[in-house]
Length: 161
Image (cartoon, rainbow, N blue to C red; front, side, top):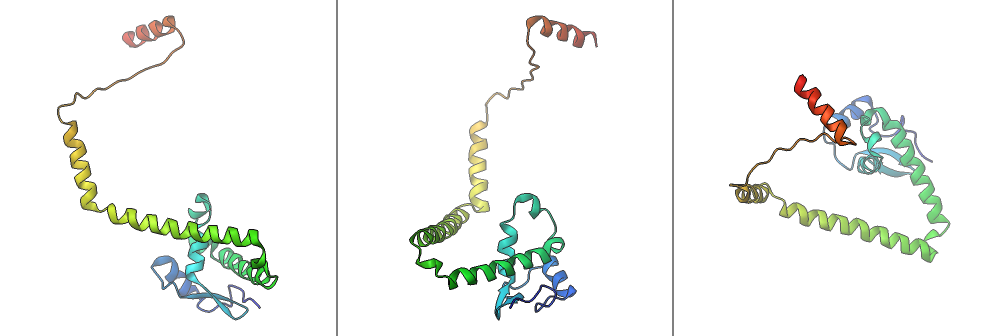
């Protein structure tokens, strides 16, 4: 049986304030479902997976809804496993693809972050701007109109002030 967010361990107002004001350990328990803990790290994953407009909402404003959604997710997943969904070849194929996607994304991110150091970025910027020395800087401003007559009328209007 799932505990509601109000009855979950570490769900005091102080714990919520702590979680929203600073880093908390990823192993902090926010709820229990059938005796199994639901961790703050899972809550963060769910929050990060929200559409951008919902990520603008402060976590404390949608915290209870996120915990309730995590509880529902855990209950449904438990039922899916109980119904042997992993025996379905299509489900297994999709699960394998999802795992590969997560691992690939983490791998590429790690490699890119290792290359994008402050020093490397500064060196590339310096090289790029050095190549621009001596280039003529051009400033262009345009007003697009449909006809020559309209353009001439605008030029006269601008000249007249």
